[in-house]
Length: 57
Image (cartoon, rainbow, N blue to C red):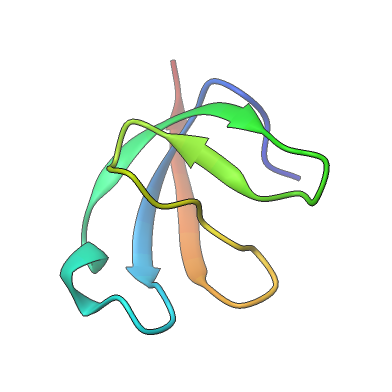
């Protein structure tokens, strides 16, 4: 399970190829379970997007 403070690497974000390979820190997890963080303006949707946890801040 992903937690605030985890560092993730985006493997694939559905419909957003420019996010592939970006890394960032999870700063907020909303009520829908979407991950918001320092990788850019879009939320990662765990049910649709592929990512891996690569560390913790």
